[in-house]
Length: 135
Image (cartoon, rainbow, N blue to C red):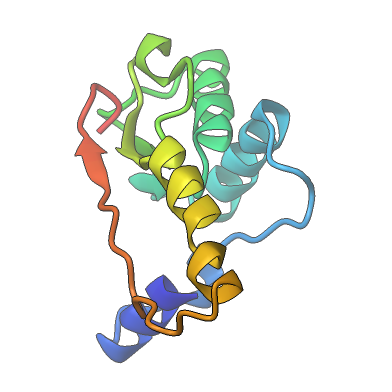
């Protein structure tokens, strides 16, 4: 993962703070992961989830456990999925241009099919940080 490499190069990487789970992303998994992380790291003050459904599940777990967000722990997600703006508190997230990613990906094979070999090596469609109440 690029993020882990960057943290390692900055001397900030702690593998105990990275939680990976092969199970499909879901609200239930986010809730479970939050509870496991808090049990393992009681002083935890912020969590960044790789998907909003995990972060949404974590927010639900914070409500059940009476954990103040963002006062006790900040929670952020990724993708700005439906419902993230309706969570209590509303979820801070990274908004990805999913439709544009799909459109761009569908156009990329055409020059190859036409034997046109000039292709961009990188296409940056950008991300947008959507700051809401959870951080």
